[in-house]
Amino acid sequence: MPGPRGHDVSPVPLAVGCAGSYPARMPGLIPIAEDIWLAEGGNVNFYGFTYPTRSVVVRLPGRELWVWSPIALSDDLRAEIAAIGRPCHLVSPNKIHHLYLQDWKAAYPDALLWGPRSTIQKRGDLRFQGALEEVAPPEWQGVFDLAWFRGSRFLDEIVFFHRPSRTAILADMSENFTEAFLERYWSGWQRAVARLWGIVEGKGYAPLELRLSFIFRSDLRKARDKVLAWNPRRAIMAHGRWQDDNGRAFLERAFAWIG
Ligand SMILES: [Fe+2]
Image 1 (cartoon, rainbow, N blue to C red):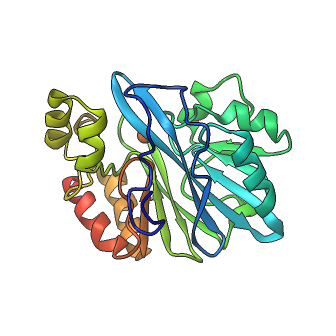
Image 2: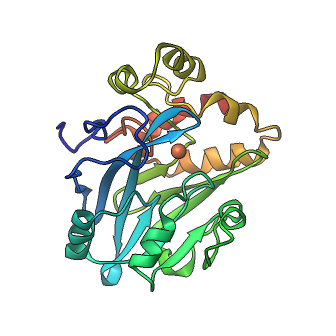
């Protein structure tokens, strides 16, 4: 098991394409700075591609927990969560990252659900507190800043910045797969696709089809500029090796395609 800092901590021994199948003991919460943790989940199958899952958990004042892109909720994870606080905010950054919201809402009925309008429209079965755009709701102000990557009919995403730890948090606007992960879980032609898409270490781009879907880029450029102006120390993405330092430089390269 690699160390918690700046490494791809996600790969745990899982079978290829085993959505819904998890080892008996997941790594649990991994502290990365004060009041911010990672939780590495199992793999999911996304149109035939094996994707690892990852949550970020942040503690707000009053031991309220903010849970980004919730992973599958196990009893072990619940126990670790209980030790650090109480989930009060369940956050979907984009309409692809919504899979376990209902399980967490069932486990923590008082928690508020948040997401962009696209997630809210997709998950009509859930009641959200409000649509996230570019300004943090009052509950998180002073702790989080938001940037809204939009201009694609395919996908928009809210990127977050945790001010106290200077951590930028991205779902699919940067994917940074390691060769080791791809070797293990993706077939030869899939690995070729990963390199073509630029979702590998050394680039860390968003997938090509997502990039191409941004036709009008003025809002996208504004969002990019906002993220870079945060001058993040860390950049954590949902898929792949996250960055413990030089986050701004990493993201400058990851967003190079925006132009
Ligand atoms: Fe994703």
